[in-house]
Length: 312
Image (cartoon, rainbow, N blue to C red):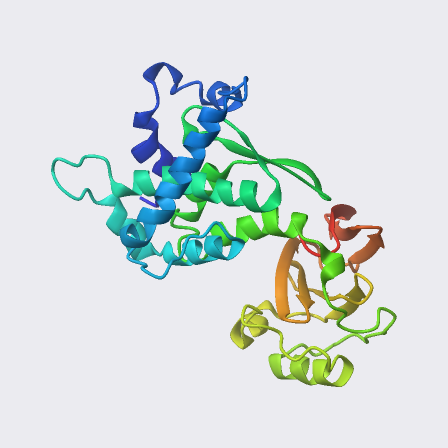
């Protein structure tokens, strides 16, 4: 049976909840477990996060993990959550230890990742019982959000996502990108530079295009789609748009299945987004203040998706 988030939760975590609440999880997840803002409860969350930071490198067999509560540490942690590691954590260590190490890693790890958002990005805890269900309230230029970090872990450890660092992807998308200060990015190229459409999209033709039209971009970065992946996408064309007063390049184009967008700054690839869409008519991108509107054709209608101009 595929190990999806629901099966992970039901098999390893649901037995830890009070029996009377197992069919009322919605109520439990909505209930404030610290209405008086008791500092001792918040200190307990900090203590659990500190404990995870100390013990996780050995538990994950990653001695160089260096969990220092930085954004980079979340990315290192996500990279350490491999299929092999997950499967080894599911197996009880001894007959006396009936609680898989996976449960301890996930419950404490959710609090650690939440603490990174609280400490580094001005978030605050919305405490729940049990504590690993606690949410992070985060305000940014994108608006207000409640981050269910425990759910991020369950999804990231599922069979569908375990081979990709999706925990880091969600953290980047929901914490780093909304709270970043894009005005501090160095200018990549003049904002009014006009970049022509690339009609024959191959990895080699893209590099030739960038050298000719955007020589300031020295590299597309380590995480830009590989030549094989770019060929697999089979872009019909690519357009290029300087955004953020020339601080970023937005690369976007349609395939037979939808529209892909890639954000790059002076260091290369930063983020991407994908929207299922019809082949015709062409999609359209509008910039309004801090927001970007992506207009996508779906079943004959144009659907609007709004996001910050520096990434989803």
